[in-house]
Length: 223
Image 1 (cartoon, one colour):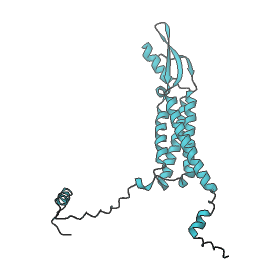
Image 2 (cartoon, helix red, strand yellow; image 1 turned 90 degrees about the vertical axis):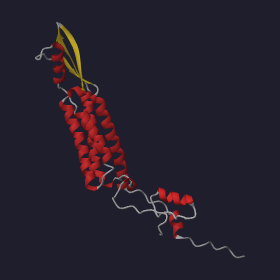
Image 3 (tube, one colour; image 1 turned 180 degrees about the vertical axis):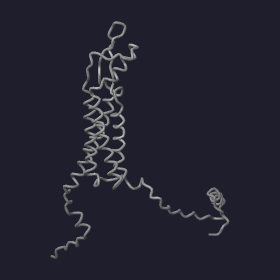
Image 4 (cartoon, rainbow, N blue to C red; image 1 turned 120 degrees about the vertical axis):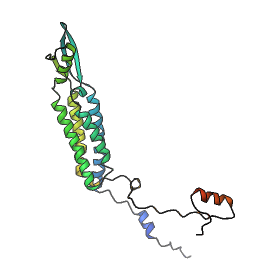
């Protein structure tokens, strides 16, 4: 009894059965850095915008023999953290839309946005000028100042938000060269696109003649 001989295996079959190559350390680092950068940048920008809307300082102003409680939000004290958070969020998205030197420039802008947010929030943490202006407006005395001044923790939350944006920028500067870019199908290289061949026109079919006229073609011209 003759045993059946198995057919020879092809290279494609061998490749299909071969175990997948293990992911390299650089690939793992690149994937993790993308996830951490996106999470840090998005959370940092959202937190900075949220903190700018919260109360940063409280105090009282003397008005007509009484005490008027006043408060100042982050946007009253300084608009820099919110503005830089928007810039940082835009830069975080743009990092994946550009390549090479452009990506490094955008990553640098992202890091600077985070550092600027940290600096602006810390410098404004103990600022009382916004409340002094409100006290002067409420009392009608330009020399009036705020009393019982106190500050909240929201300026430091804004500083922490800036630190998250800064981390995203530093990750983009360090690993950005290996990050993927947007698909090339969304990019236009300016090359002329090939023109589709015009369908044949049958002179014996009136509908074909009308369609050719609609396309701006001369149906009587010979190909």
